[in-house]
Image (cartoon, rainbow, N blue to C red):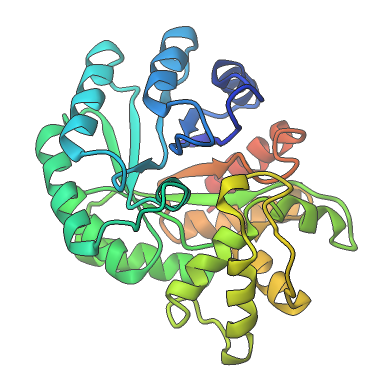
Length: 311
C-alpha cells in the first residue's frame, strides 16, 4: 500500500483534489498532516476524502498526541471507521511542528506509551493504527504497545533495515510502514534534489540530532547537522521558506539530504524502494511536502510500486 502525505497549508490545495491526484497516479490514498497552525483539521478532512473519493485508505498522519487526548482521538477514529469500515488509516506520534508551534514540549516517552495503551484499547482492530517512530526506544515501545509502526528513519537501506528488525524483535507480527521523502529528479548537478529537500531538511536533521549514534552520524559532522536542524522554521515547515538565515555547512546539508531524501531518475528511485521492500517494509507514506513531488507524482508512484514489487 502506498499513500501520499498531504501537507499543504489551508487554502493552498484542497485535500479532496489532492486525493484525486494521488489516486490518478496509482496510489492507494492519502494521509493528512496534523498541525493546527499550518493545515486544515486532519480528522474533518479525512471524512471529506473518504466520502468524496474511492480511496482505499485515508486518515491523519501524523496526529499529534502532544495536543490531543488519546480518548478523544480514539472516539474520532471509531466514528470514522463506523462510516468507512476498513478504509481508515491513523498514524499517531509525539508531535513535532504542532507542539513546537504552540510552545509546548512533546510528551515524555512514558506518557506517550500510556497514550498508546489507551488507543490500542479503544480503537477497533479493523482500523489501521500505526505509531510514528524514529529512534530505537520509540520504535520498540510502539511496536510492543500499539502493534503497528510507521518508521521515520530516513532513506538509508541499512538503517531502515535495522529499524524494521528492531520493530519485529519487539513483536514479530507487527505491521511496519515507512515514511519516505522521495521525488523523481533529473538534474545531475543535484540542484533539483537540493530544491526538493529544502522544505523538510531541517526536520530531518532534528531526527539525526536526537539519535546520532542510531543514525551513524560521523562525529565530524554532528555540529553541522545541529546547525541544519536549528536553521529550520517549523512555522514554515513544508515550504521553500522553511530555512532561516544562518551559517549551515554545505557538507552537513548534503549528508542530511542523502540520509533522508530519495532522489534520482525513475530507475534509481525504484532501486531504493526495492531495498526497502527487501528489508520487510509493508507500506509506504510518501511525504507530500517534498519540493516537486506533485509535479512528477505519476512517475514517483510507478517507481515506488515497481521497486516494492521487486523487493
